[in-house]
Image 1 (cartoon, one colour):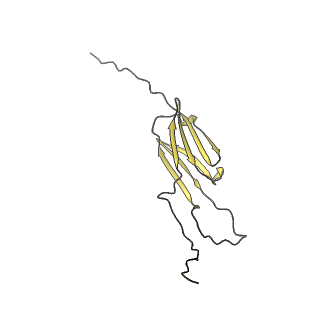
Image 2 (tube, helix red, strand yellow; image 1 turned 30 degrees about the horizontal axis):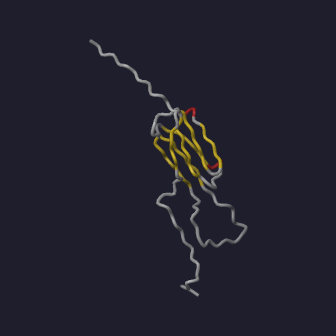
Image 3 (cartoon, helix red, strand yellow; image 1 turned 180 degrees about the vertical axis):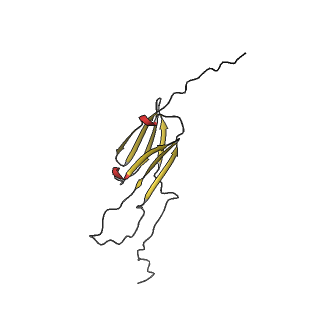
Length: 124
């Protein structure tokens, strides 16, 4: 029966952005990024640094469903490429940064670079 109140319809609901959410915080000596990437395989994630930017990119894949029939009634988990570019808010030694992946969260830690005051002499 078309148009019935009991009829289920396929729909897609999107957030304003599909980029992964990120928390950034600092400790005494580290800058830390935590990026939510649930369901993303670690082999499908790339982390690079260009200039003052940290770039996290990859792809969300859906399980191979070619062997079984599926009719989606709701689809909110997107399968697509993502690219998150974040400007580093403070100076860090990104070459000595480390990343780990646990429970769908990437944690990137980079040591802060101490800013040393340099006195500039005035010539007379």
